[in-house]
Amino acid sequence: MRQLYKFCTSFQVELRGHYSAQRIESLNKYWHSTSNLRALLITAMSPLPCLIIIAIVDCVPLAPPEAGSRANWVFWGRDCVSIALMTRVVLEEIRIVVPCLHMTPTQANMISIISSTTTIAFMIMLANSIGFPLPFALVVGIPGWAVVVVGNFAFCFGRALRQNEVLRRKVINFISVINCPVILVFVYPVYLYGFAHLESFTQSIYVGLLTFIKLSARNWMSYFLGTKFDLMSQMMIFNVDVFNVVYVSSSVQNSKSIVTTFIMIALDAVLAYVSTSDVGSLMRTSSYYQP
Image (cartoon, rainbow, N blue to C red; front, side, top):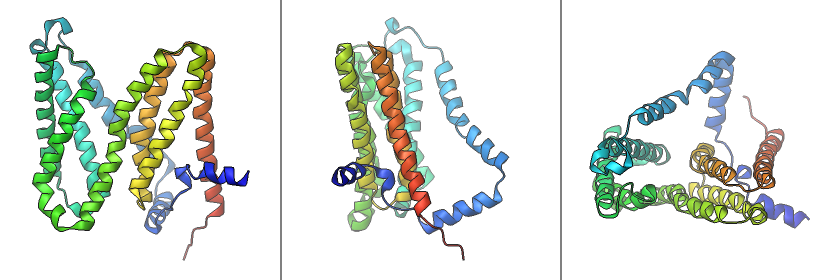
């Protein structure tokens, strides 16, 4: 039983690593200098800019799909804005994870604009050849987007990466981290297709793959983040957990049995309980040195 317990805990990323002394000291200062009301307001209002941007993008009226690709120029413009914002988020992550790259906000903005416009041009070309709306547009557009981003990245930082092996290794590790949500874009639709074409009893067994995919993705990101434990939580929440929640809800909508729905909810509840219990046990066994 002890060996089984060790094997199971080896996959729990929340048990790995530690917070830096600077992170704990910053938390301690924030805890003693910030009122509960201010912390509550920041927590409640932080998602508002994202929600406002999404609402503005979705409120733009679109032409009917039957009108074709050219008539839906607003649709392509909306996609261009969305891709630019997502690219900017990825580049902001690399600015945080690899600060020694010295990427400026101007460089990040230019790469985002160039990659989004080029990707949309590529997707419009495909839509004119295949048909509109473009099937699996996100999946089809990712390879073109990746090529453009890598090309721009090589143009801006190629010399520094060739001359600095440590910097090159850090960037490669970050790319491996970002590859995780990119691969999930392909994995989850395949999972959902299989789930929707199964009978109710088989769905109840098949749903366990969601947990396996989530744990695999979290361990993948944990491995390539290495010792950057301070960044691990937010990277996993935004790149793994959010993806998982979206496809859990899609699976619930396609479920053919209430039992399958309860199993999905129970699996999520068990994982959440295990994670919070692990964090609680670590807090009880850890100590903070106060000089």
